Image (tube, rainbow, N blue to C red; front, side, top):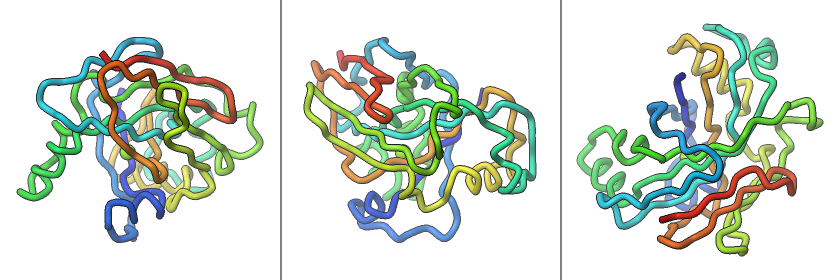
Length: 203
Ligand code: MG
């Protein structure tokens, strides 16, 4: 299973880091060992003092394809989930400053908490979904997928030019504005249209 992630895919989030709106999707990946199943605790790693949450809609690919045309992309997914793209921000900053790849800041063990998948057919439009994150019962981040710069179908088309997509591959579609740090003892809960999808603690 491959895990693709999209950076800078919500304009307000790009602004919070002082970046430029990208002209092409920004793609990186995480190893499958990054997945943390719903309910499993996240153990705060000793190599960072600044682990940020990024709440994201996750798409699961349901069949093999490459060079997928955006208009046929809807045939390649029928389940969605919520995930967190945990980021060791301090480490990422150091690596970016040196022009080095930031895999270790994004792909470490447990850096991809993932809810169970639900059928997309439950929802009217993948590009009009509300989602939000609570930490210790307080809402910390919320977004709507209508604000994506590159929509799900464009992301699938773009990624599939470079990588053969296979059944079970995941795409973390980017985070909206409002990212921030987690701390030991925090309880995170992520909601998709007011349905709790993901719940776990930082230990
Ligand atoms: Mg992200």
